Amino acid sequence: MPSFDIVSKIKKDEVQNAVDNANREVTSRYDFRGTDSSFTLDKTDNSVKIDAPEEFQVQQMDDIFRQKMVKRGLDIMSAEFGEITRSGKRSIQTVTFKEGIERELAKKIIKAIKDAKIKVDAKIDGDAVRVSGKKKDDLQLAISLVKSGDFEQPLQFENFRD
Image (cartoon, rainbow, N blue to C red; front, side, top):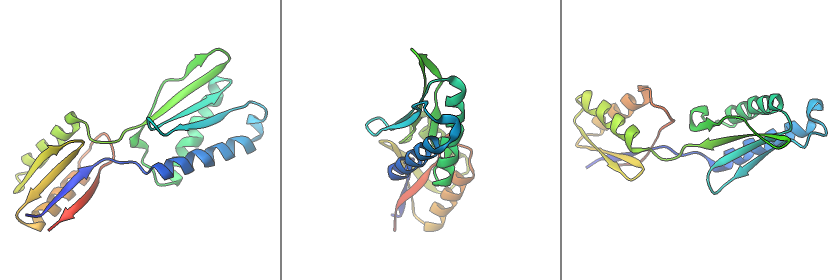
């Protein structure tokens, strides 16, 4: 029986490249000279820390990082930009990346597929949604339905099997 998985993953190497490019731009810009501002990637919890002396500099660095993410092909919806906090003489913002499909979003995807009355079966499988059906055409209809839907994070389709 043909099936595929709906997942939400980020390209960690592209996030690393976006952080490196943003750091390179910050070190070369005149308005950031001598400020010791930086982007730091924490690979364990998929987050980036934006660190600068002043809040307006963090806001500028936020824009730089968003531009670098778009340039590297990363979806902005996969990033959650936190509030700017003040710690001593530094301002810090944490950007966390969403990976995996949470249970509520999975239920929303399954409901959208069932409401469309496509002859497929969708089930929650860990942090992914497994969709299976008798015909490949039905699966392609489900893919196009999910692509056109408005969900909170970017979704990818993998493990397409006949």
